[in-house]
Image (cartoon, rainbow, N blue to C red; front, side):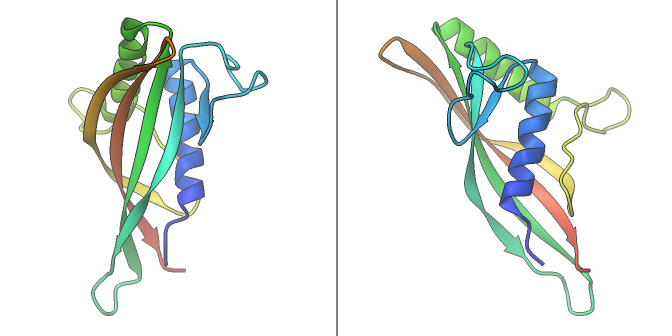
Length: 146
């Protein structure tokens, strides 16, 4: 069974909005009606970059996948974009001290996130006075074969 890229992206989008307190667009900038802060900068934009599935051994009902996502943190200054990127990184990777569990859950319908990592941290670029800090994250997903 494969992982729904859309369901993963929706789970990550909800997690980022909760953890950062800022809007996160899905493939585009947030709209003025986006929750929680509309299109007010800083915000982030989430992009699906594909996935690789790896099969279970014969007789195993579960399958796993590695899902790549890009998060672009947008600001009016390099510092603002970098600060928002720090919040995004924290949301993905922070753990509860002493437990090893991730501090912010990512809820995905039909799958379980079993691993997270920073795949690439490309830093800041500027275009027409808008600064963007790009990060790529990899999620390892487990999907029960039902």
